[in-house]
Length: 285
Image 1: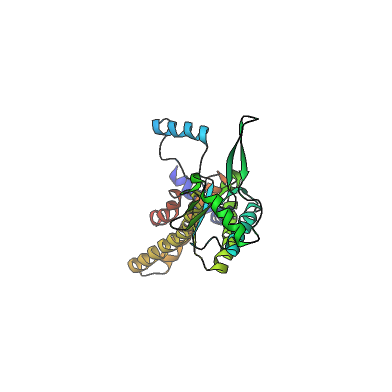
Image 2 (image 1 turned 135 degrees about the horizontal axis):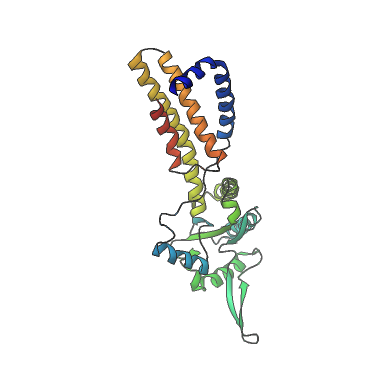
C-alpha cells in the first residue's frame, strides 16, 4: 500500500503541488478570519457544588461582568466647572451605542417613601447642571447625606469618585467590545486632559479587552520568535539554506491549515489555543 501511495505522489507531483497550493491559499485566507475569544472560560465544571451555587446566585441577583468602572481622585471635584463637565461626560457616555446605563455622582437617586401609594420612589438628586457654586454646594450636601453611596460611588475622605457603566451583553461577546471600550476611553481622556486629572479604569470588560490585545500581540510575537529560532538552529546544524527554506515552507503551510481549520470549525483563539501555532512550529521542524 505504501509503495502505491509513494508511486502515486511521485507520478502526480505537479497536480499534488497545485492542489496543496490552492488549499493552502484558502486556509491562509480562513486563518485571517479566525477570531479571538472575549469570554473567560469556567475553571470549574457545571456539576461542581461551587459552580451550582454561583449559577443560582447569578440567576437571582444577576452578574457584574458587564460593568466598566471609571474612577478619579480629586478633592476639588465639587467646583462648578469640574462637576458640570463630569455631568456632561456621564450623559455623553450614556449615548454611546452599547451602553445600557451610567451611574455616577451626578446621576444618583434618593429613595423616598410614598405613604399614600405604599411604595418607594426613586428621585434623582439633580437632573440638571448647577448654574452657581451655591447651588452646587447644596447638591453636594444632599449627596453626602446619603450614607448608602459613601464608599461606593464616592469617598469623602480621599476625594475618589466612581462612574459605573453597564454595557450590553451582546456587544461584550464580540470584537465590538474593543471599539466600545475605546469610545468610552476617548471621551474620558478629554476630561482628563482638560482638568489634568488621572483616570483609572477597571471592571471585567476592560480587563478582558486588555488581555485579548495582549494575546493577539503575543501570538504574533511567539510565532515569529519560534520560526526565527528554529530556522537559526537548522542553519547551524545543516549549514544549508535549502535545509532552512523548505522546512519553513512546510511549517507555514501547517500553521495556515491549523488556523484555517479553527476558523472553519468555529473555534476561537483562547489563552490555551494560542499556544498551538508556536508549539506546532517546533514539532513540525
